[in-house]
Amino acid sequence: MKLNIIIKNILLFLVPCLIFCLNLNAQDPAKDGYVRLMQEGYEKLVEENKESDLEGKYYIKYYTEGKLTKISRVEYDRGKRQGEWLHFQSFSEGDLDLATIENYDNGEKEGYYYNADSSTDFSEEGYYKNGEKTGSWSITKNGALEKIEYRNGKKHGEYWRRDKSGVIVKGGYKNDEKTDDWTIEDLSAIASEGAEENNENIEIEERTKTEDIGTVKGKVLKPDNTSISLVAIKLTLNDSECIYAYTSFDGTFSMQLDKSKITENSQLEIVIDDYARKIISFQEFLQSNEIVLDKKGKLVTYEEYRSFYETIKSCSN
Image 1 (cartoon, rainbow, N blue to C red):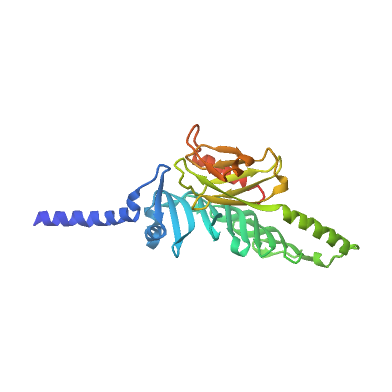
Image 2 (cartoon, one colour):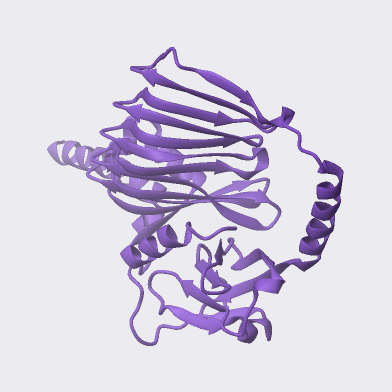
C-alpha cells in the first residue's frame, strides 16, 4: 500500500515535468544556445503567468495559414525578460523585416526601443529607463513626423510635428500638460515665383532618378547550401552611403538602390552569429546573386551581431 502511494506521488511530480519538457520541444537548444519553439508552444508556456518558468534564449516562429509570418528572438533570466528582444515580421509576400527591438533589464524595459509597421507607414523610436519612456522619441505615421520629449514616462519638454500637407506644429509639455507657447505654421500655403518652371525641372530630375532606381535580390546560404534567416547585410555604395537588409525565413533578401551610385569599390558585408563575417564585392555578388557563408576563421559572436545590426540602421534604405 505504501509502495502504491509512493509511486503515485512520483507520477504526480513527473507528469507535469514531462508536459513542461514537451512544451519546450524537449528543451533542445541548437548550437547557438536557442531553444526552438512554435507559436503555440511558446504561448502555452507564458499563459497564466507561467512566464516565470522560462530561462535562457528562445527562437519562436509564428505561422498564419501555413505561412511563416514572424520570427522572435527572446531571452529570460530566472523567469524575467532580459536583454535585447528582436521581432522580424513579414509585411509583404516573401519579405521578413525587422519590426520591433525591445531591451529589458530584470523584467522592465530599459534602453533602446524601436517598432515599425510597413503596412501602415508607422514607426516609433526612443528609449526607456526603469520601464518608462525617457528622452526624445520620434514617431512617423501616414506621412506625418512627430518628435516628443519624455521624462519619467510623461511628456516633458519640446514638441514638434509636421503633417503630410506641410503644416508644422510646435509647442511643449510640462509633466504631461501642454504649455502656452504653441504655434502652427502652414508651409503648404507658401508660394514662390517661377513655381511652374521649377516643377518642370523637378519632374525631369525625378524621372531620371526613377530610371536609376532598381531592386537587387539575393540569397544567403549555409555551407551545406541550406538557407539561413535573420542574416544582417550591409551594402556600402560609396564612401558616404550604404543600405541594409535582413534575410527572410527562406534566406532571401532584397534591396532597392540607386544604380548610378554603384562604384567598383561597392561591397557587401554579411554578418550572422556563429559564422565567419563575409565581405564580397558587389560585382562578384551579381555573378550568382548567392552568398555562401562558412565557419573558417573567427566566428561572429551574438554580441558582435547585435552591434552590427545596430550600426547598419544608420544606413538609408
